[in-house]
Image (cartoon, rainbow, N blue to C red; front, side, top):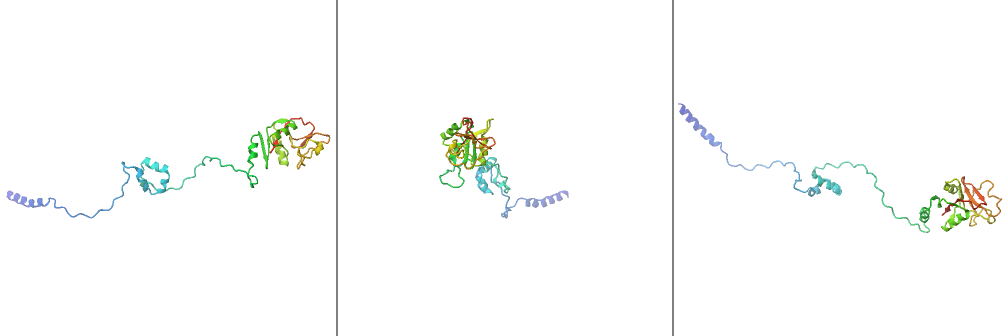
Length: 246
């Protein structure tokens, strides 16, 4: 009886085992959904080949930025959005000097007199008042030597034309003796000390009390003292400061 049952069971299992074998291939299925884009930058490729695909292409104008991407092998597509502008950098070094402005005869405006300036800067003492320069080597000598010194250089002995010039002239003092010769005519008979060496009337004076000294009958030389007061002296050999004007 048992043999009969075993035989029947084997007969039933045989068709079932046969049907579990792989069948023929079916038809092609539908395409799947697109995947996420992969990185175009491969280890074996040059990053510079992909910089033309930058989202912010204007950044390519900065060569340092481009070189940085290539050097660091940064994927251009990984760049974020443009940030806010940074702060202004520090001022750069001064540029080269520009061309000199040439002063022409008859020119108008504030064109500086370069010829005067180039001449003035050769002296130890330089003071500018308006269009006039007072210059000196801070040397002291007699009145005649002072006139000669300035004349040899194509200049004139200083002569203040107003209070400001008079005060500036006293800035030459630096030693105990504080007197400076000025360009007032030294011949009493040629204008009673009221004209300059060209015999032109003085337009500004600052005589001290009792000046010009009426006791001087012939030759007298005029100097400016520390407080700006004008004094005539017959001692024209004294060593007062020499200041020229241009």
